[in-house]
Length: 276
Length: 260
Image: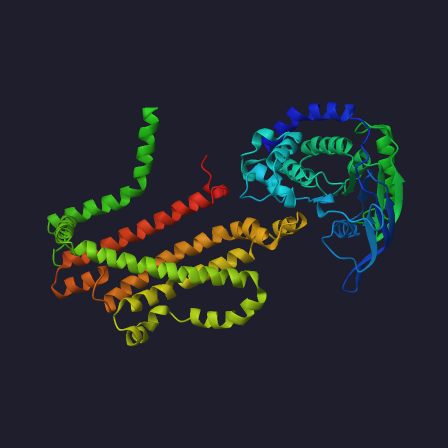
């Protein structure tokens, strides 16, 4: 707890400045096309025929209430589950991609407790782990998330925020073209969250991957994304462009206005006292 | 600096205070005649008996024989338990096929088989080793199986998303995840190993520590009987310490084994 808060205080300013100076995204991402995607568990339809196009390099946040199907959508898109019907593809329709082109980061860091921090990052290289220079690449990426000096530690001695940064390095080390986040900051305290959000924005701007982030924090969605999708009962009910220029200021009027619009849409039929 | 080292030495002594104190009281009670030498000889008398047997070489031969039986039995039973635990942990089909039989055998106390084992193997080495194998098999089997079953499924999913092969998944995720539980099984197995050996050597043997104790009983050599019991205690402690050392070595990543 204390260690996490301290590291935030130390590293937040440097992330800020780097994020501010970053050049516009390099087009290295892949576009995503989704056609009539359906997923049912038994008789229970979770996704009801989704259509969606995401251009290469866009940062998209997906918000919605618990159980709306947003995490299911993400799991389908990274290949952890199979759709009931419908299809999706990255890039051009008949293009083949390596598995390491699409990476996912979970709410839990999911680090191997019995592997040192650097070895955990190397896991992200997949098959390329045995190639020459793999270790250097992993170390470079680890330095990129500010944890180069912790390379030989066990994950159990790191704070929650540091573990999540190692998980981010693991996802980034193979230079993915699409990076999916499933509530990546949901388990972190408020200050660590802010520094992680800045780090995510910074790496996205540097590397230009297409980012898909499921979150239930609407403010976080507006701060980071080019576009916010609202999913309700298995359908996209709101598709909102976020045109606020970067760097965005937390709590500015524009951010708050957009956040309000999304929250209104989320709770449009909620009565007072009704549980979200 | 030297005060720190002294402190460390004193800390290392703490676990031995109680056994040493007990020995002291025992010696005192024997010397003052509170405990009859026919019932329980003084520790010093046991040491003298140990010296005598060591000088003739009898002690070393018997310890070697018992130790070898224990290790061979552990190696065979442990390997079987470990391999079967792995296969059943990794394959539901295999477990379905073998589990009923294993559970039935497990519920027979293996020492109940002694009469049958004597009929089969006489009092040869095979009899003792067979019993030790049975004794160590189940703790290792059950804990290996349990360890594999309880590996964090989120880590396995992570391994899959990063394209690990089945072999890599086993070697880098499943086996290390199961290791703490496997060590618990090993330590239980060591306890069963000595227990089985003591009983088997006492009932049917022509060498070994248990045999030495039974011979001494025939000639009313209480000091040798007590010596045998103490040797078992020491060997048991030695085995447990070895297992703990291995545990510290292999599980240094585990928060429970990190100093500081």
